[in-house]
Length: 228
Length: 322
Image (cartoon, rainbow over all chains, first blue to last red; front, side, top):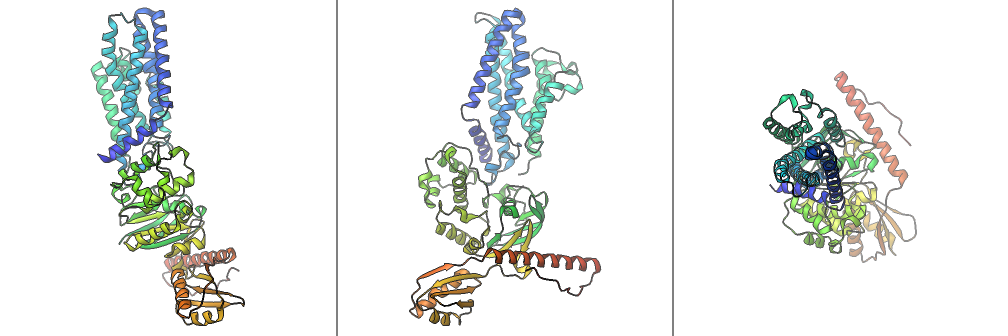
C-alpha cells in the first residue's frame, strides 16, 4: 500500500504547477464556446454534436495523452517510477499508483469538459440539460479513466514511451470505424455510449463492458510487463 | 556478508564484464567513459543489463524491490523525487525506503541543514548529487553502497563525513563499491582497487599489477634519521631521499603507511612539517593501465587456447608496452 502511495505522490507532484490547470481551463472554455456555436447552428442536436465531436472525439483523447505524458515525465510507464523504485519501492505497485492518479485526473477533466460543453449546448432553462448531464457524466468519467489507463499501457512500448503517441494516432484512425478493427479502441465504444454508430452492432450495455475490459486489460498489461 | 556479481555484463560502455565483490570496500578506477557510471547504475538496480546478469546475494537488483531496499546508490546524474522543497523531496525518498527518520534529521547528520527550505528547482546538478549522496550515506541498513565518484561531493559534504560513513558501513558488513577517476581519490577511499578501461574489466589481483601502491611525501627537518627508522618497517616498501627536507615513502596501504610514519616520527621525537599523498603521474597511470590491458589480453588469449586445445600452451614472451 505504501508503494502505491509513493507512485501516486510521484504522479501528483508531476501534475503540480500552472501548466496542467491552464490547459484544462482553456479546453473547458473552448468546448463551452463550441457548445454555444452548436446550439446556435444545429439547435436540437447541439448537445450530441458538441459531445461526440469536440469533447469525446478531440479534447478528451488529447488531454488524456497529455496527462499520461506528464505523469510519466515523458518516459516509459515502467521507467517513470525509477525515482522511487531506486529506494526499494515495488515498481508494479508504484506504477499502479501512477495509473490511479492519471485515471482520476483524466476522468475529472472529462467530466468538466462534458459539463462545460452541455452547458454551452443548452440554455440554463432547458429541461433536457439535467437529464443529459446525468446520462453523460458517467460516460465521461469512465471514458476518461479508460483513456488514461490505455495510454499508460501503450507507453510501455518504445524506448521513451513512443507507443503512447501511436495509441493516440491509431485511436483517431481505427477507432472512428465500426468494424472489428475498431473494437480495441476506446473511441469506438465511447461513441456507441453517446448514441453514435456501434462497433459490430454491439448494444450500449456491451460498450460499457468493452470499455471496462479495455481499462482492466491495460492495467493487467502494465503490471505484468513491469519488473518488481 | 553480501556478494555482488556481474556475469558477462554488457551495457553501454561495458563489454562483457565479469567480476565479483564481497563485503568490504572496493574502488573501481576509471572515468564515466570507461563505464563506471553504467557499472554503478547496474549494481544499484537502476538499469537492466543489455546482456548478462547482475546479482546481489543471488537476486537481480533491477527486478527485485526487496533487494533495492537494501541498496544505497549515488549515480553520475541524480534527480530527487519531485517536490517543492528539499525537505519534501527527502521526506518522499525516506518514506519510499521505509526510513522513519525525518528529513531534517538526515540533513543535520550531513551538515546540510541549510538546504532544508531550498526549492528543488533552484538546486544545481552538483547539489542534487550531494543530497542524493547524503541519502545514500545515511541509509540505516544497507547491504550495498554503490557510489559514483563519492569524493566529488566534497565541498558540499565534508570529506571526513564521506570517508567515515564509507568506512563505518564497510565495517558493519556492507559491500561498498565506489568509483574514482583519479588514483588519489581511489587511495583516499581505500579498499581493493580494480580498473575499468574503455569498458573492459581489469582486476588488479588478476593482472598481477599493483595499482594500489601509495606514496607519501614527508617534509621534516631530520629526513635521514626518519628514513633510517622507516626503512626497518614492514609497511614501507621503499624510502627515497634526494637531499633537502623531503622524503618519499612508498607502501601498499596509504592509511597504514601514514600511521606508521607518524608513529615513527613520534617515537624518535622527529618533527613532521608536512605530510601529503603523492599521486602517481599521468604517465605512470597510463603505463600501468596499458600494462594491465596487455596482461588481461594475454591471459584471455591463453584461456582461449586452453579451452580450444585442452592443454596449457607454453608461455610466449611478448614485448612490453613502454
